[in-house]
Image (tube, rainbow, N blue to C red; front, side, top):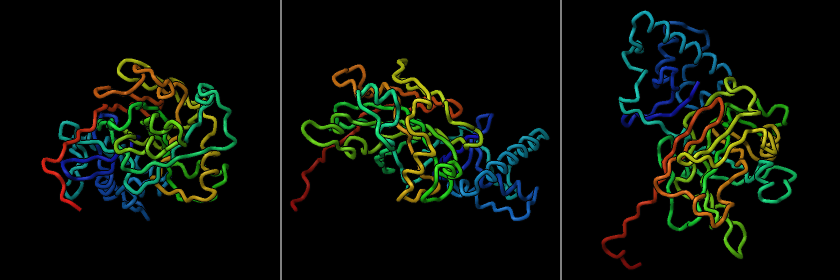
Length: 332
């Protein structure tokens, strides 16, 4: 099950990608399903957006499976899937569907600053006693097939593949033993940073300038519910730029695992449905090979990130286009 946000024309949809590669609007599809298969106490509003879906927990996943089976049965009978109102809820890529990042504005994004044994080894540093984070804002986000944008102010850009954990239930002071109850599913994260700005000479580390630029974090292409992923340890991970493998490993390399991370984070912070925790890079982060031109991103690069049981996230890289004003700005 691949949960998505997508546009058709200017219309926003929440839904899923089917096994046949079609895009299903779950809000419309579930209303048709409930119309034919009334369920006492059923709440169709849970399928209006990702956050509402997550709030329904495992029950949302189970109902979605039934909706998919219903559509398949009806199609086998020669029926064109439409809701009782006549509204369509299945679309094809050639109709102009555009996938969006499966994270909405307003979501909180937490990034593990360092969290793999191999990454600490390559940096020749001792692992910390507990997880430590930086945060990102949704100005950073791009969705599937949208470009990561290189900004001229930074000269050492790199990118890392990370496992993204999507929160499904609100919580605070969550014990490790109950942390997975608050997880909805998983996605792929590409975290782009400028190491020369993050670690400026003769100055403290600057996480905002190094990691906070517009269009510097790709998330997607979808969210896979935790019920379908199963145990996230291990999941194979790979990052390719063009045909070259830049990172390869699996989630067993992570120093801190999800329950411990959520317990630590929620000691003073409330997590909410739709929030994302990006678990950090593996070893081989190219930005730590300073002065190595072949390990820097450049305009025209094609990035492919893969994580087992989730899929592939393919993202192009472009340079920011800036246009000088034709007339000088007015005096203040």
